[in-house]
Length: 107
Length: 123
Image (tube, rainbow over all chains, first blue to last red; front, side):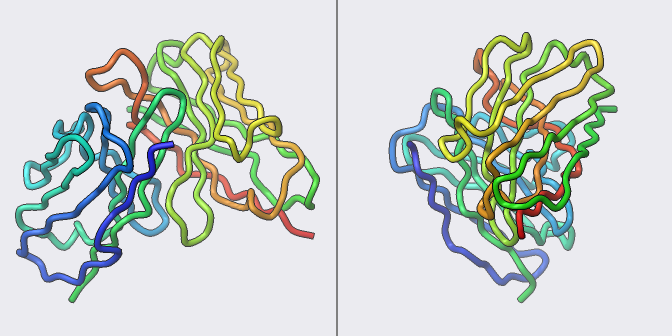
C-alpha cells in the first residue's frame, strides 16, 4: 500500500497569503495524484487531478505540481472561501488512498 | 447537473447489517465506475469500494473485504452497498462518489459526491 503523508497538519494564515501544501508518498506515484478540498458538513471537492490538472470550475489560483514521491498544492493568494481541509489522494492498482489532510485556518 | 443522493444510513447494533443506496442523475450512469467512500467523525476520507461501469468488476478496501458488497442497478441508476457484520469501526458518513478517469484508462479519482449518509454502529 502506498501511504500518503501530508504536512503540515495545520496552517494558520491570513487572506492574501500564498499557501504551499505538501503530500509525500511512501512509494513512487505515476501521474495519478489528486487534491481535494473539504469544508465542514460538505463532501470533498475535487480540485486537482493527474498532479497538475484543474478540475472543472476550479479557480486558477489553485495549482498542483510534483513527481515521484513529492507533490504540492499551491494557492497563490488565499481567499476567505479557501479556509478548509485539503487532502491528497492516489490510486495504485485496486487501492485508493487518501492522505491525513492539512487544515488551513484563520490566523 | 450531476446529482448523487445517498440514503439508508442509521443506527445499527454491532454485528448487524445495513444497505445503503445512491440514486444518480444528470449523467449516463452506465458509463461510469462508482465508489463508496466513508469518513469517520473527525477523520479523513477512506475509500471503501469501487464497481466498474458494467458492474462486472469490484474491489474493496481490506478493512471491509468479505463483509461489504457493492452492486448497481443500471435500470434504476442506483448504486448499493450491502454491509454486514458491522463493528464500531464502521461508524462513519458514507458517500457515494462518481469515478473520474483523468488522463488514464481507468477510474482514478472522484469528481462528484453525494451528501453522505451517517452509519452509527452502537449498542
